[in-house]
Amino acid sequence: MKKRLLKQIVSSISNNFDTKKIIKNPSLLPINGEIKDAIVLTSSLSNSSKIIDKFQQIDKDKGTQNYFKILNNYLDNFTKLILIQKQSSIFIESIDGDQISSVFSNIYDQTKNFSLGNNAFNSLSTALNLKKIESTINKKYSKVFTDYKIIDKEGNGKIIKVPKFDTVIGIDCGKVIMGLVNAKSGSFNKTQFQIIGEPSDNSKIVKNLNKIYKTKILCTENIYNLIEQTENKGQISFRVLDKVRFFENGSAIQLYDVCGFSKKISREKNEEIEIFNTAIEKYYKKDFANAGKLFLQANSISGNDATSLVFAQRCKKLIQNGINKDWDGIINLNLSNLF
Image (cartoon, rainbow, N blue to C red; front, top):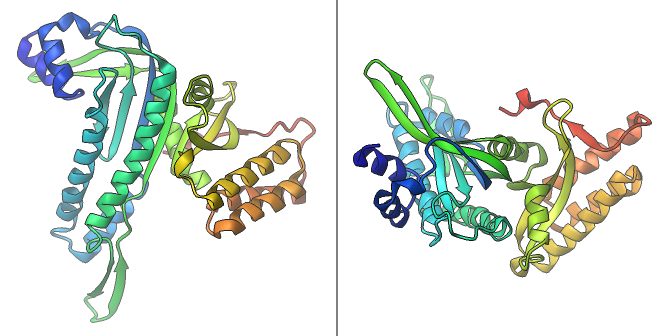
């Protein structure tokens, strides 16, 4: 492979340190497809279409330009956070609009002792810090994310409210295939580094499930179990959610809501998490009446825990409609409603 093309590919996914390392020793980059352990974190804006629509209502000519100016600043800060980490086990696999797929895996240094457990914690820390960047961007552009009064053609005034950026994140891990994918057709020639496998697909599905549970960061049991087996156990707080099946006849996967760094969570939020987790235990034991009461109690602490209300409403429906004898709590997803 030509040095120029190699530099172009590597610099599009990695930091300067790793780019120099690969240019010096190209054999470190898996080209023809290698199976490796990896953690995949996928993030995107849940409300990008709505924001663009509002900007265009305010200014048809410059609306999208204003959006892309803020989006580029948002993506710059996100990628900087991911790539600034001084380890050769994280890279950006793709940026598609406002969606970023980041991968934690030892793809370069074959001698490095890569730990999925430690990088599971790194991926969750990255997710929580990405939400901090989102908050910073929203504050920086607070005069943009506001209410606008416009006059229509008939001379009537109306208020247009531009919502703030809302980032949702999904994380999963497992075996993936890594390598270079090349497409040629006439003068068209594109080569890029890609990963293929369930963790990549699942992270996108889990990310989109945030809109159902009214959450921001979701991970699978694969990530949670890794954390529980390391010295980082207890450093991040979780809420247990549903067991879901993505595909017919597929295995059910337990979902977890990533609530934050345990030491930084308020006493009230911690109480809310504990009550919620007690409620979910009763829910799986088919004690929907008491589970529903506890979900409402969890919501009452802050008054705005939408996730608790999602489960409280479900308990109410299950009491009203009843359940099948073989009910096991597993949710079979209709993926067409998520994309």
